[in-house]
Length: 394
Image (cartoon, rainbow, N blue to C red; front, side, top):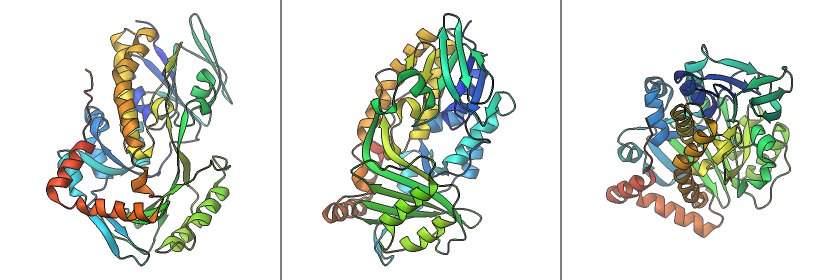
């Protein structure tokens, strides 16, 4: 077997999941992460489908169930907090045969990280700045550390992937903006709590929601339509907060209270809602996995699940091919890309539910949500939404 040392950029979900499976198959993964330590917090995700299956094979389910939350209700409210529409979230459990949970993305990433922390070399506070592919392997240059040799380099570094930019070119060639932005943060001691409920307030083009967490914490989620890209740098938190104040200030319900809590938040997630669509996921000795290759956008609701499943498939094909990267990368894409492409197409149709752009569309969204309270209809719609037509290999 050859191509044994694999340099992975990114310690989110895809990176440590890939390292876990590669390590089990005799490879030597090395992870480089821009942050000085494993990231925490993040936004709430619904976790099910192929990602849930991979987590089960990793033995993660007991820990994820302990960390996760059982969603009981999706509640849509008006400016006074009065319920406009709601649905029983237990339909999600029924449609997935009980294989569904809500969890903070940072908690999921941390549990995967725990599986590799003692076995895999990690370089924190650094990033790859250049890649040189020669006949015998790769040389990676770093911002701080000395250059390293590796047989393969994998970009698992998210929507704004550094490895993708180095190996494939400008992000604008592959990013498809969907016309929305999202933000999330966590605050302590927010006074309004509805345990087990996702409480959402929407006006045309904007949604703000909250969810009660343990230990007196609350998670908040912003979603808004935007026709033109915002000129806000990725780490410019003051500008991000200003953009949210401009769009949600004085909008009714608890918007001003939540914006007040936002002012004290240091860790704010803020980004465009976009998909990454690429004809090829590999080039030479470089391949991409997770959002770096096929970000489905949060509208799909399965970005972390796809990251875990893609990492599993990539590790499997590398092992099947005895480490022959050309064969493995081609097989990885052949097996997984049709499934991801279909999920991306489906996700583009869901923006209207999060942030209907007109009052009429908003009313229609509320009517459809209430129709989901009819058991037969709810089960049929949920069953279609939760269908993952992909079988993990191995």
